[in-house]
Amino acid sequence: MKRNRLIIAAFVFFSIAGLGFAKEVERPDWVDNWRTIYPDTTYVAQLGKSTGKNNANEAKTVAANTVAQYIKTNVQSELNSTLKTHAGSNKKGRLEISTERDNSQTITLSVDTALTSLEFTDPWYNKKEKTWYCVAYVEREKIWEQYRPYLQNARDKLFSFYDIADNNEEPLYKMLIYMQSTEYEEEFFSAYSFARILSTTFTDTNYRSDLATVSSVSAKVMEEKNKCTFSINIKGDEKNIVYQCVKDELSGAGYVVRNAGEEALYSVNVNLHLDDTPMNSLHVIKASVELTVKGKTTSLFSYAKQTANVSGINEEIVKQKAANAVSQELHQSFMKEFNEKLNTGALENISL
Image (tube, rainbow, N blue to C red):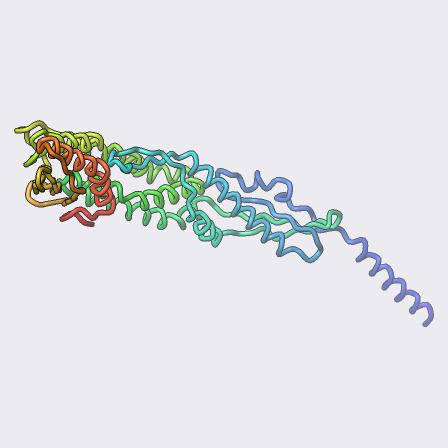
């Protein structure tokens, strides 16, 4: 009986000892060779590590966050290397082409969407290092197909603007639409850049021609602006002071001003009022101007200003001073107001 007890005790002892010397779970190949097992051409993958015996889930979280940061960094780099050219007008009304690099706020949202497709290796614990390892990965084709509807939606919203412009014969209207597409253009560039990080091949194969179209919009704006020819019809401007001012403002904004008698798409009709109210030996001129920009059939823009009274003994000199005062006002505000209404779609009979 005593002998049996000794045998049982010895069995228990060696069983416990055996547990203490059990082999560590074999080191998975992906721990050291994850870039080979999950090649960058096929997968978006990143390794996560976490120290602590009970931190297996944290290793997964670290891996997922590393994938997110990898995508964000690469998308930002892609955006920064993709020059986006925008057309707009400065305060003087002159069309300017500016090149920008966008820092889109849609990147984080896009990454969050992409992370829903992540898969993970079973976390592995290295007893010697007291560290958990895990790889988060997703197939590029799978994640690209999941993201494609977002890119397509951004593309369709932008191109709906272009379709409206392309189906209209009015150059100013077309310019307006192209210039107001900037917000949707940025959204498309962000989506396109994000999609290229997921798969350059799939993105370029399906959307490269669309990118080329978007990149050519600024040239289209310039093309339409070159079609915007103006004629100037003016009354009450004996010295052509106001006429020259209006001509300089339009030319300075990049528009073509036709000579008298030449055909133009738009006409600028100006009425200069130099009302003389004599007071004893003085001539007091109350100057005002009314200006209307018209298309073939409708009025597009109206402008009216009045200046402070100008007085003097010589009527001709006083009228010239009054005309100069009107010209100064026109220089300050005519193209500024026209440009503001053009950029906001508030021109008369032109709206989106």
